[in-house]
Image 1 (cartoon, rainbow, N blue to C red):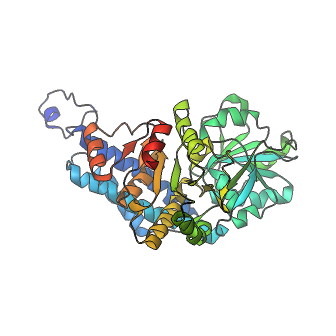
Image 2 (tube, rainbow, N blue to C red):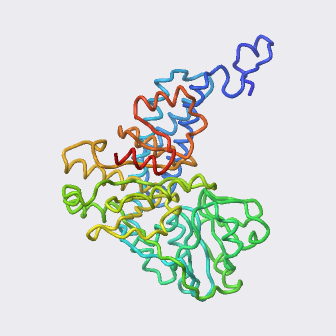
Image 3 (spheres, rainbow, N blue to C red):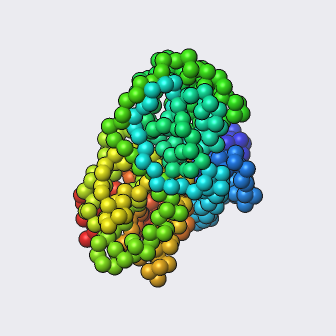
Length: 428
């Protein structure tokens, strides 16, 4: 990239710099990290704003952060690292804001069992993150007898009282976002993409797919606003789904409002040695067998451990029946990636009750990263001073060895390796 402010270019000398003109790889890397984090913040703020919730401090930071990434503005590593950590602080504000918007609009989450099968009749499959779009669709489709199914990060919708009250909200189909081309091709109904994590469709289902809001795809009809009549009509015109039970039943809806009242019992089980350790295993999933690490970790976690999970990373293992510990489910799905705020609240409450810091809890975070919101959440956890996080299956490419060393020195950030070996280190 040639920079028109580069002195070499001004002097008529060809510029050979690749990337950000004149900047060390570490500076470039921190700027990339900041931009990725701000993209994640923007996603949460966007969905909160759709529901009428705004925060001027979030908007102000986005302007500041983007400005700091302009050419020849900030070359200071420590200042840029501080900005990345501040993005973590703002991520917490954004997650709190969206959690408030969801709770006050759709009611607080409640545990729910979710079918993975289909019901007879016309159907629509919804993917993405947008609860507002799902609500409006359910409201319009219910009188017409059109069933609605969730996919990937829409699974937690089944935990919100005002959403699961709709009789036409049925099960959850498929797993994480990247199974779309296989799943959508076999699904005979209409399809709606509502946010990021949509894939360009092949011809096999392009005519049956619609987008809404921020999502747009070439050759796919886009719905402006919340009039879903075309989508519903398409579902009515397509072959109806059959009544087929799913192979497994999933659980979701364990928000902090559900888990916090159990904190006293959890602490008693910790003190009596019946709960040895808590794991937060979640994040963004992506293709590749290397991510089977997370399933292996959960499968091999001893029966006296509890697994908290969130985001689409849970689809690597949320079909497992882990049982319970004296009525406390061993697998607690806390929701979408933005519901990381619930996990933070639970960890903070347990630490306060025990009179220690979060880092002193019998708790380990094992996270998978793939896209921007995962970076924002990682910055939020680092902003809170949480140490010893396991991150995998690889580190973000923009983290140079010098930056990795900085993070390891400050936060004891660790890279996942072998599930069995990592368990031994954590529990040893």
